[in-house]
Length: 426
Image 1: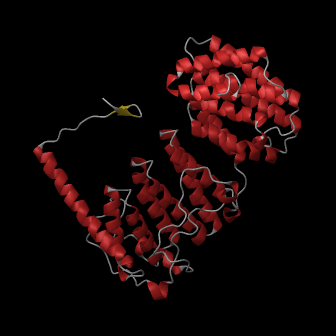
Image 2: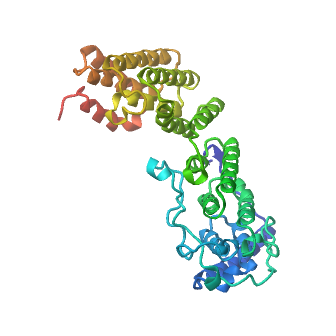
Image 3: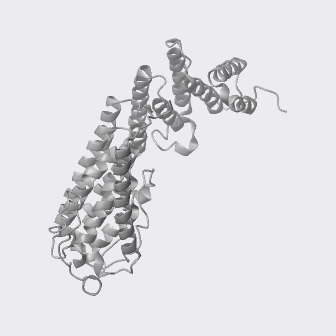
């Protein structure tokens, strides 16, 4: 039976009663969905968005389908007509967020600014949003009572509304930890904290959010959504808007903690690599300190490879460290002034280490073969020479092992053999 991520797929056989129950659930959902879409099609601003029943309707839809992005956008409109409406106006909230967060690697220039900065902001309260029309009879998510919901009451403190909304999304994100729309909505709420609240109050909310991310990563330490979200939360906590300071040391220690609890954590290794340049700059590290730091990182990754020699995450971080020596584009990352003789010495040491590692394990390790080929070629480049006959013999042997361990990529190995001059050109 096929499986996904190690979980076997099963076929659930339903009884006629279960099928009938499912049909009823579908009918209820379709009714909720049609009501929501009809409301969303109305011009904004509309008195409907200030009614607590609308917020309750979004809760009904989202409790059944947290991927319903229109429901999240309607919920934003409700807030901008409610307790957020007492504040200065901005771009129209009728449009969805223009730059939503995603778990990718942001550039340093964009990390400090919120990706929700062009999202829903506050309309003018007097001319656009009428007061709430009263309690609703629609059943909301258990966390929200529409009759007392602070979000649709303009007199409510935005701090109370923000915390209520964050609480509303908490069970949803626990049940759906990889749903983009929940993460985006929480990020929008956090941006509103910066826009609407005093800096100390807003900072406290962002710090609590960092605690939530930590909890999510304890549940699934390889959740790349949570890792990307954590980087964004940290960048905002470091920003002047929240009277922040660098958290590089604390976050670097956090990556060490996560790596120690599980080596196969690509996101933790990746985050560690991203933090290193900032960390060394803030420490005012000189050439000697940078060389010592690089040696320590090589020692760390060698210990990790001793435990998990087939772990792809470990080999990628090893490749990252080596690239600081072999790639001109990343020479400024750790040790920019490393003498060429030292670079060659480090690479030769790594070649010997990998050979020893292969001798200790019976199974072939494809990534180790690839690393050896890269290192041997890099040594020749750094010494500004052609590969020796002995090195070409080693390369041919390694390519033969790669063909044997990964025959599906025969064409790749043939092309690579030609590129490095081990086979005659055609």
